[in-house]
Every structure is written in structure tokens, then in C-alpha cells.
Length: 311
Length: 311
Image (cartoon, rainbow over all chains, first blue to last red; front, top):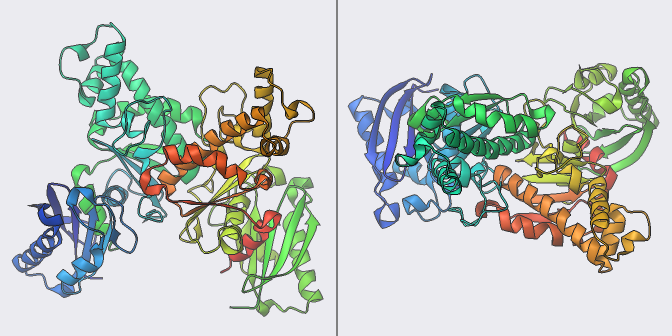
């Protein structure tokens, strides 16, 4: 194979880009703005221009490039067809063929950003050495990526691994961003943990450091580490929801490892103390032997995974 | 490829066997007993002997046989290693290599029986024309098989698709066969529906035809069709549990079709009336567009799927 790969991770405000060698070492990283105006018509041309510029800069010829991997928000089919990439304003289109055309026929592979990030964590992050992995991103929302035998499980319409929208609570009156009620994302994301904490604060008169500043997922886990009782109660609720959901995922997918990432995962290993009890209690015995690990690539998981699509 | 394939489905009391042409037409079907004594040491030799006998009978030479597919209970790894095939008494072993040796090097492919049956339904049953399918078998227990892009999702230790052991109820005091509490199997299997019905009969004084004879899943759905209020209540509970579980599976796997089989599925399309409301309410919008179909191969799904492993 050729010497270089480009990895591209398209976000709502910036496009992260990386130049990799074929062993997966990142040689250079940079960002360009995501221009979402006019239905995002400039996004792919901007990416193509930036890649070409980098090639000139580094004296890399087309034959030296194995191809370009790209992760984008929303469902992405195996063929490269993108649906509902709402954040980018894109109409339905095939991003692989479009970007290939803009790059004079260069090979392009694409996938959903959360799925691609999961692949990145498998390749060079918290999931190294495993081929059957479920990545869970606890950020503003809850994202997921499922890797089976080293390949992304895309699903029939590109919506495989939408684990943030697993139904986990029947008695929810506040709607999830997706319109349903009681999705995992409503309790296990940063926003969800904040929701649980605010509810706990309202429901009790118990003293808590959480009453003294703005409530956030970080504040909750900082308070947990300081032994705050109310924060520990919130962490237990969070762990009950997420642990049971991971138990269900285990029974379906039978992975070797869960890799937990996203902003919430900065709390560290303490998360596992709260997730594991519910997981151990509810997971099927044949699927219980799963490693829990933290993601290690942070915001770079996307560009790593995108590059890995070419291998 | 060669002209013939053998499909073998190993059950706890009988081994079902089929001779197929390469288009998947079954030319002959027969059964032999499953001899489980002495850790099931005769099972594979009996199968090999029966295949050889059939070949002599039909004047089929080894070169005319593409191979033998075999489905067995318990987790089966992609390599053919069988774990915990409790029903058969087998120790841990590689059934592919063992059977190949007994058949003088003939090609053997194997899988878990529920997974293999799912493949059969995809090939020649209720899931024909689809490549991303979840098969749900509502029998004494609840079995499952997940097919992604035409291939069985085996899972890392052969326990993929164990959907009967998805945790669906926190307030259960009776243990599932697996040892956990609140598994889907406890409510959606034939036994589970009977449990729900007995509980409903005890909890209420309402008149019901179910009070007049032995309670069974069949009796419940017969009563539903006759408009029996209490039976309808039970069917709603069943549908709530199963519909929500399928919603969760959809968010993870994003299949094109659910194929519902097993004894309970003999109730017919009426099942869907009770499953779909909870599914529609809780499934993620991007994964909601799923076909619901009944399995059509009955007990032959296993031999069809086993033969399909060779293609």
C-alpha cells in the first residue's frame, strides 16, 4: 500500500484533519472551519482543497496516498450515502463519490463519526488489541460505535450503534432530543447527569456541595470523589441506567471490551465503580466477561478511525 | 461449487438432517437420535455415519459434496469451538475439526443453532430478500439470531444474539433459567406468557376463559382472538416487554426485518398488534423502519441455515 493516509473528522464547527503514515502514526494535525451555509456545499470542496494544499506543502504525490477516510455526523450507509446530516446542512448525497471526484479519483472511505471514532479507539486507543468492541461516548449526548471482527457495524440504514437512544426508563416526562421519552442519553450524557443531579437536589433537603455552584457532570463526579452523599446517589442512578444498558448491549453483541469516552469519561475509573454493579447483576453469564476501559484518544479518535478505514 | 450440501441441526433428543442441492432445495430430510450418554461422544460419529450412508444410498461421491453445515446448542465461536453445550453433554471442543476428521476431510461449517436457524429464515424463510435480519424464536425459551450483511453475528465468545437474556424488568422475584432476574425470556417465551397469565389470573377476579382449562401461551392467544379481556391484558404485557426489547435491539443493530418464530408465533399476525405499539413508541426514529414477519420454516430452519453456511 501507499505511504500516506488522510483522516478527516467533520464536526459542526470545525473539520479535524490528520496526515498519517501507514502504521498509524499521525505526522501532522490541523483544523479548518466547517462552513455550513448554503446547505454545507463548501464542506467537501474545502476538505479537498486542504488535502491538496497539504500534499503540495509536503511534496506528496497522489500515488503516495492510499486514500482519505472521513467521518461525518448522522447515519452513513456502507455505500457512503449520508442521510440527515442535520448539523452540516447537507442534502442526502454520497459523500464518498463526491469527495473522490473532488480529489481526482483518490480513494475515499466514509462512516458515521461515532462509529469511526470507535474504530480509532480500537486501532490506537483504549481498545488496542481487541476486534470486538463497543465504544460509548458520554458527551453532550450519548454516542456509540460497535466494531465486530474489526469492522464497523453500520446497520441497514447507517444507524447501527445508536445506543444513546436505547429506551431505559418508562416514567419519563421530558422528551429526549430524538423525540422519544426515556432514552439512555437522558441520564448518561453530561446533560443527563446534570438533569439527574438537579432532580436529586430538588427532591431532597440534604446538604451537598452541588448546591454551592453550577451543577454539571464534572461537578457531580468531583463531589463523588469528595464523598458527597447526594452526588454519590446521582452517580448510582447514572450507573444503574448505563450498567443495565451495557448489559443489554452485551447480550446482543457479545463484545470483548467497552471503551468509555467523551467529556464525562474524564472523571476516570470511578465511573466503572458505578456502572459495573448493574452490569454484573443483569448481563447474561455468557456475555459478562467484558473489559471496561477508558478511551484515550479524546478528540483525535475520529481522525485515527477515519484513517483506519483505508486499511 | 459442488452439487450437494448436507445441513445438520443437533437438538437435545434428535438430530435433524437434510440433503440440499446448491440452490437450497431440500432433496431429502431425515432424523437420527441424539445419543447424549458418555458426554455425547457418539453424536458426531453418528452424524458422520449417517451422512456417509446417505451418500452411498444416493450414489453421491465426496467430490459432489460442497460440505456439511451444522448447528448446535450453546455458544459456538467462529472457529467452531463449542462451549457449554450442556444439552449434549459435550466437553469444550472444536466441532468443525472433529467432524471434518470423521468425514475424511470434508469441509464443515458450524454455528449456534438459533443463529443458524436465523440464517435459514433469511435464505429460504420469512426473511427472504433481506441481509440484515434479527430472528426471534419464542419457544420454551426466547432465542435469537442476528444476521448482518448476510453473515451471522457470532459475538466474541459465540454468545451474540442472546436476546432472551436482555434485562427488561427490575421487579422480578423469580429467577430466569440463566440465574438472573427479569430477562425477556421470563415474559415473552411460551413459559413466560403462561407465567404472566397465571399472575393475572391470581391478581384479579375477572371472568376469563383462561380459568376453564390449563393455561398456556396457545390458550392465551386463542382467548385473545375470542376477545377475552384478561387474555388481552396478558397479551399487552407480553407485547410491552417484547416490543420495547425489539426497540432496543433496533437501536443497536439497525436491522431491516424482525422474523418471529417458535411455538408462540403460531398465534400468527395477532402478535404484531401487541408488539408494535411499544416498539413504535420507544424505537429510535432512524431505526424504526423495520419489517415484522413470521418465520415460515418451522423446525426446518436449522437444517436450511446449516446448509447455507457452506455458501
